[in-house]
Length: 259
Image (cartoon, rainbow, N blue to C red):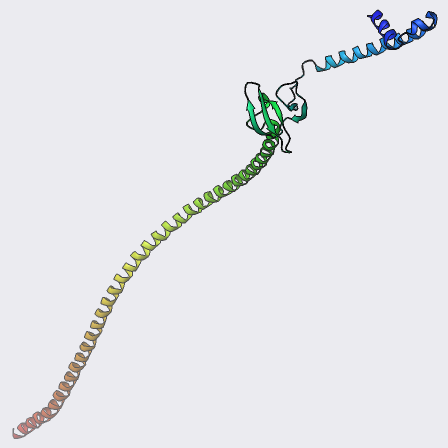
């Protein structure tokens, strides 16, 4: 290897010098160049080894950024018109399955032949990926928005659930109150019926009292009349006695006088 580098340095850097210059003058310079070349080669080996050690086990992907040739005829010996990058939209004018080439036209109007196996009926991922990524970002934003709305709706649902529970509890309380009102209403109806009965009884009792008072008045008037008649009879009897008694006494006196 060292001899090869020595010979390479002598051949490339100083061609024909050994034939024109003295051997003793060229050898020191060759030694210096030889050392520099060896040093550069060693550094290149070390860098390659370090790079190789750093990439072992790492993942790599085949690039999708490539170009195809557009030629002025069918075959790889035809002149190249231009290079078409991956994802370029072109118009298919003619296809030759036997040759494997297709005549196409670019958006700028350039026509040429390209290999048919490089043509796709749909846009490749290189073209559609930005749109997919944009839609994915939009979908992610919508998902985050929907997640936020779902969280808000969940909170509102929990609040409504608590309100429903409170309403149900209040409803139970209202049902109890309604039952109590119904009970009191039933009692009130019963009491009203009793009041009506009492009013009827009171009216009947009042009528009886009125009749009794009327009877008492009649009896009192009759008693007064009777007492008045008795008084009148007493007076009459007294008057009669007053008239009769003196006569009886006079008769007795006269009869005694006759004796």
